[in-house]
Image (cartoon, rainbow over all chains, first blue to last red; front, side, top):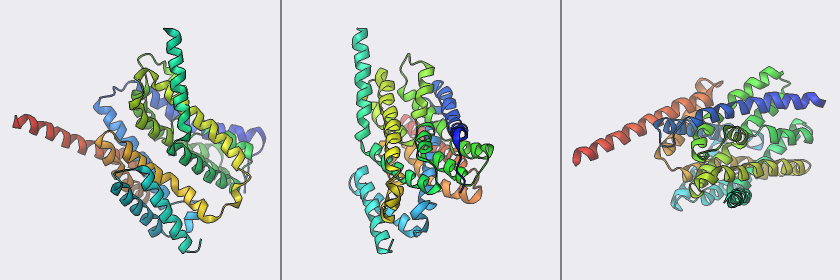
Length: 114
Length: 248
């Protein structure tokens, strides 16, 4: 296990972490400043941003890290489906969908002996 | 008049700060406890974890950074990995800026505040700004975003010494909260139909491109999935407008 030491650790985090992420935010401000709220280009940007976030979400569900790495895929997908069903049945209330999905996952993990 | 104006800015900043007790903020804080557990396992000292929380304000980017540090990657390799994972921040910020800027919001202020845009603040802001007066949206976002970052730095500093003792079920559920919350809140807060279509296509495109080109999966899923969603919705919208005009 490698851990960074002294000032180099902070420089490393600042360059490989802060700079590497905030560059894109600054470019986003420059691009967003030219967009009108009702423009077709903004509609496209909105779609791309949403699809990017959705892809991150799909990866977190399909390829998790930590404890869930060893949990079965069917349990994770099943929890999402049960949660989505509850979400729509309750008139699209986020809290209902989230609570149902997490409870389904917890019950499954318990049943599997985690 | 001026005094009244600045009081009103402060008022909306405080309204934004109060968002720290909202469902999305609480879920993010729970996710940070999960991240904290990861850094303990990785052997990263608590001061560096707090610094990282404030400076690298995007949970997936932080996870990749920790992974790079654990693997002993050099600076350039770590920079490239984190940068590739963070391209999505550009369209996210570009989509948010037209929603929150006022007529005279200076660009330097937007550049500063853009640091606080990550998925949680983005989803929360898009959901709430419709109820905030146009010229107060920047103050509202600043109040929420800055509070969220500072609260999580504090949380990480405190939680660091306790997380190792969590039972596995709790740790697993903490991790799972993030994707589940993103799905529910993006669907619920969408004010444009194209967002629903892009969400579904992105969920399918993510794993597909991971299988095809694992290095650039998120980027390709966003660009291609998002563009297909936009083009499909636009064609549908234009056809409906044409039909309505034709039927008149």
